[in-house]
Image (cartoon, rainbow, N blue to C red; front, side, top):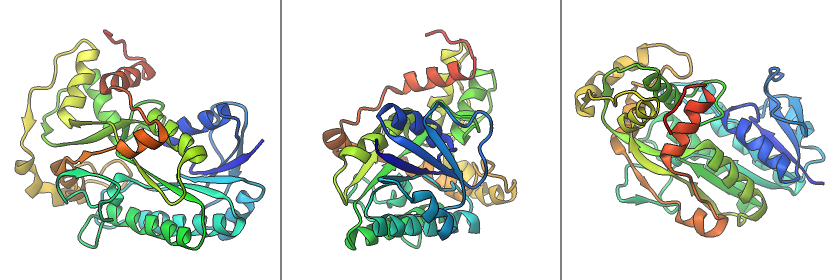
Length: 323
C-alpha cells in the first residue's frame, strides 16, 4: 500500500481530503504545526505528525517513506501586509517541492485561482498569466509559490498543480468566511450585503479533484477546479430560503463601499476578519468567469450544484432545511 503525506491536513480542505485518500487505498500521513484536536482525525488510517513545512528537517522526516505528497498548507489573507501568510505561501511550496524532487516522489500542489491574474477579463483558464506585482498580497504569494513548484518541475519533479476557486460547504469545523455568512443568513440575520461575487466550488468536489489528480493528473499540468459563479447575496439568500426564511433584499452597490475599504485593514488582525479589505472587495468586483474544462476532460471533475452545497452546509450545522 502506498503512503502519501498531506501537509496542512488538519485544515478545512484537509478534513475533506483525508478520508477520501484513505478510501482510495492510500496510507495517509498528515502534517500540522501542532498536535490535532480530538475531532481532527476523520477515520482510521491517518497518521499525524507534528511539524512545520518551513522546518526542513521536520519536513524531510515527515516525507520519509512516502510515495507522494499533497501540499495544502497555506494561509488565506486578504490584508495588505501579512508576513506569516507570505512566508508560508511562498517558502512552503518551494521547500516541499524541492524535498519531493530529491526523493523522486509525486507532488500535488494546491494553489489557488488567486495565483492567476483575475483582472484580465474574459474566461479565466490555466493559460492566464500568474499574478504580478500589482495584485494583492495573497494573490502574489500564491503565484510565487506556484512558480517555485514549476521551477522544480523543470528540474525533474513529477508534480501536478490544482487551482480551486472559492471553497464553500461542509465539513468546516473552523468556520470559513463565506460559510459563516451563509449560515448567518440561514439563522435569520439580514444584514446589508455588498454586490459582487466570485466562482464557488464545493470543498468535497475539490477534495475529489485533488485525489484524482494524485493518481491521474499529467505531470507539469495545472487544473482549475471551479464551480458556479454567483454573487455573495445569492449565496446568503439561498441559505435563507433553504432554511424557510425570506431572501436578503438590501444589496449595497460595491462601488459605494470600496472607497471605505482601507478602513477594513483596521478592523482586526485575526484570520477571517478581513472581509472588507481592498483585496476582498476587489476580488468580488472582478467576479471572474472560470473554466474547469481541462479538469473535466482530464480528471472527470464534475462539481455539484450550488444549492446542494448550501443545503448540505446547513445540514452539517443542524439547521433544518426545506429541501
